[in-house]
Every structure is written in structure tokens, then in C-alpha cells.
Image (tube, rainbow, N blue to C red):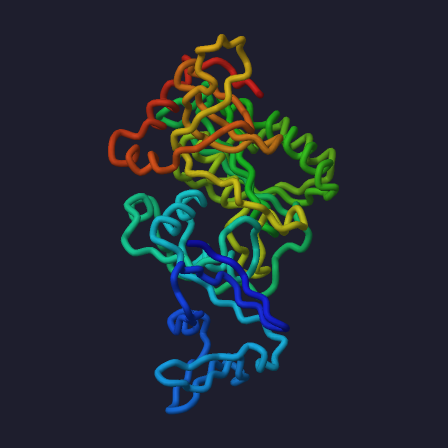
Length: 380
């Protein structure tokens, strides 16, 4: 019927399942084992120990049961039993987090690296077609024990990919990707042409250094003309930023809204191997909240308070969820009727329909391919 935490003296048991009609409180052996605890049964006694051999719980056999008296537990350790997430819950958060690996999702839970993610054990019971098609594994590389950079913004990596075969909303065809070497925090900027790169790059450097109160020391790009030009070089020289070059490469192509949303979720869910924190936590010095995450491309409804409505008019407009606002806590929604993108906090989501949309032609494909007919975004 539900879950709750049980507190008794100095013992806390988390995520206790309430089953109506049960006359006994039952412990799950499987959940103990999933937490790397040792469960030992003998003829008259049972015990649960941690990896250090310390006894957390002890029971004395009565008939065929081993009752445990929590009052006799002499430990200050917290007994945490993670319930296994339902398959539906596991895949829901997998998709909300832009198809994040299940091992990483469980790391977010065990390390308490984010807020709003239910404390469950997430497992996959079948393959994800999108992950199998879109992800390639590389040979493992031994991580450098010492960071090459210390504070955030000391070294920024940049690359421009495009033009995209499908024009995104607003007529933009290029994606400028910027990655902080220290935290792996990522920014994305969308451009109509390569010629916009110098102005967008200079504006980003000025704004980011002011917002984070940290200087950029080094910039690493390829040798393409959008980075290697007089305007960029003169600005970098004037502010004392060293420009380093690397070999050009061809990044993966994606739509702008999809890239922006993936970047947004990745900054708040990927864990830096060296620091055991998310890029968001490293760059902003606080734990991110992901409770409000939703499945990209799912059906949603937005409260219509922009127009004068009569008594029988619909109070909400149907739309498609396409991301998160970069300036507020609002959601970005494409409205089917007006062919506009708006930002609003008054949104309800139908994430169940996202599975149906995947089986047929994705609605979001038609939306993002329709950009040249769409007006400029409107904030609400």
C-alpha cells in the first residue's frame, strides 16, 4: 500500500513496505544481500552483519520464525534496506535522465548525489533499443590520478558541429559545445551559421566569468576558421586567455532541443570519476534536484492563461515536452495548436504516452522539423 521509514530508539529502517493484512513485520533476506550484508541462520539464532563483521540485527528462533527485538540492537549505525524499484519506475527514471546507465542511477542514490530521486534499487530487465543503437563503448583508459586543472573554468574545450540535416526551431543549424575540463560541466549554444561563432563565444566567456566569478585561463579548440580567426584571437589576447588547438573531429549530430535537454540532465546526473560528484555540484557547489525531471518528448498539457477564455473554452493546451528553461524553473513546451514554444510552470505530463509515441513515428521528429514555420519562443 505504501512505504515509510521506521524509527525505534537508535535504529532507523528506511523504505519499509506496508502490506495490508500482515500480522508480522517481515525482513527481506534478498534486500539484506543486495546491501552487501551477511545473513547467517542457525538452529536457534539468526544474525545480520556488515562487511566489518559488526552485528546489526539478531533474532532468536520461535517456532518457524526468527523475531528480532529492535530494543536489543546496540549500534548507532543506520540500517538501510533499499527496496527494488518496479520495472516501470526503473525505465521511467532511465528515460527522464536521458537514458542514463542504470549503474550510474544507483550511484546517484547510494551516494546521495542528487535530490528528488526515489531511494530504490534500479535494474533493467530488458534492452533499451535507443541505448543499443545510440551508444558505443570505447576501450577503457586509466584515469589520471591528478587533475590536469584545479579550479573550474581554468581550461575550456570547445567544438562546433553542423550543419544539421534537419533545421531546428528558430532556423539554427549549428551546435557549439563547451566543456569545463575540471568539472565536465557542459554548455551548448545554437547558431544559424558558422559566422556567429566569434560573437557567441566572446559573449559566453564574458558572461560565464562574471556569473561564476572565476577567470578562464586556457581555451582548447580545433583549427577551423570559426575559432582560428582575427576577432577571436584579438579578444583572447586582450583578456589574457591562452588558445590551444587540437585536431578537428566530427561530433554526433542531434536536434537542438534534444541536445539542450540531454546536456541539462547530464550536468545533474553524471558522476565525475575523480571527485564522485556531479558536474552541477562541482561548478555550483550545491547538490542538484532532479525530482521535476520528465521524459523528453512526452505528451503534456499547459494551463492557458494567455487568452481571454469563455465558459466553455478549454482551460489547457495540448503540447509536447521539449526541455527545461535555462533562466527559470519552468518547462519548455511545444504547443500543437499554435506551433509555438512557450515556457511555463503550469504543466501536467502524460509520460505513459511516451512509450506509445516511440513505437510509431516520433511526434517530436515532426515538431523539430517544422521549425521554419514556428514563431519566436514566448515566455510565460
